[in-house]
Amino acid sequence: MKKRALITGITGQDGAYLSQLLLSKGYEVSGLVRRSSTADVNDVRLKWLGIADKVNLIDGNLLDLSGLIRTLRDVKPDEIYNLAAQSFVKSSWQQPILTGQVTALAVTNVLEAIRLECPHARFYQASSSEMYGLIQESMQSESTPFYPRSPYAVAKLYGHWITINYRESYGIHASSGILFNHESPLRGIEFVTRKVTDGVARIKLGLAKELRLGNIDAKRDWGHSRDYVEAMWLMLQQDVADDYVVATGRTTTVRQMCQIAFDHARLNIDEHLIIDPQLFRPAEVDVLLGNPAKAKAKLGWQATTSLEDMIVEMVEADLKRLS
Ligand code: NDP
Ligand code: GDP
Image (cartoon, rainbow, N blue to C red; front, side, top):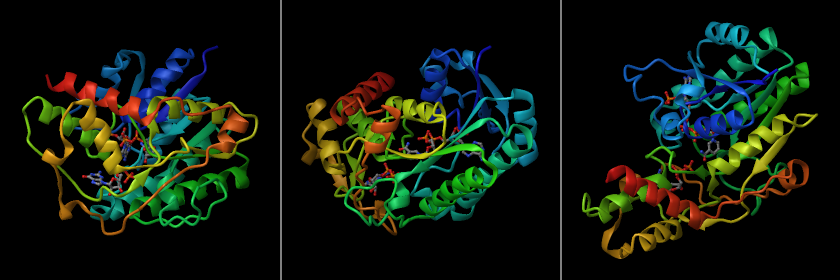
């Protein structure tokens, strides 16, 4: 019998790559899609990977508990990956309440639906390195204390702990992946890597002259989404549910990341990059650096794509899209 997976957030970056991975492993893949007036474009990432017609899309919203219960009753999934969220840190200051409802409380909707409908299904929660915020240790591991610095990070912390609580309270096989930033050609255009690769491609093609950024001194541990969804899957294949940091173990400034993109396009960064104070955040996460030792030891997982290769892949994809 084919294994069945349900992915919330299937239309997002990770949802698309995870679908591709699970399909390649022979899973039947279903995904929750929130209703939109532009339904014709919400599967654009699945189409990019050529898998839009291979997954079963179900109308639903993480905020709607009864819909989730019916979805689980219909799909009867073996594995549930909760990737849906208001996932953009900057927007979380603009929409703090919505961020709390979707990114925090709605995790309990999914867990309650599991408890009621399929308590033996395995659950993955998309936790985030943003929870470390004002870092308490130079390299962050599963035991590093959290210090969230945005409404998004506060919401993710709730999702993380409620996942652990349902594991401990009800014995649900619930794992939380503390994933550091991961990108790809399918990354949302509002995130800095994609904003940069799209901007560089526009400048190269003569469609734009400048690229405006905020704090380019911030440092992130960037990996590739295609690698990171593999870690999600591995977590749900373990006999015992647990929490894992997923990271590369290397940190780079936004400026250095930009330099890679400009260099690849043979453009002079100083002629095009403009620092815009409007793009700074009310509170910043200055540096993130993950320690993936546990994921390596227990899951046998490690990142395989370098930042350089990933940024080049993204610039090339944006050049292709725009031309
Ligand atoms: P995306 O922003 O690309 O995708 C988010 C997904 O959530 C989209 O499919 C979106 O649907 C869906 N969604 C949002 N609100 C709702 C809702 N109310 N009901 C149902 N679906 C909803 O994020 P990523 O793929 O990059 O990330 C996946 C998860 O991992 C997120 O939870 C994110 O916070 C977390 N994460 C991501 C990291 C990263 O670097 N990428 C790092 C750590 C954690 P729609 O297409 O309609 O907008
Ligand atoms: P985050 O780590 O989840 O917030 O991912 P982002 O890609 O949105 O931001 C990464 C870092 O880049 C943060 O420290 C931002 O402040 C910084 N940054 C600098 N300029 C920009 C910009 O124009 N857009 C975004 N999204 N981030 C920027």
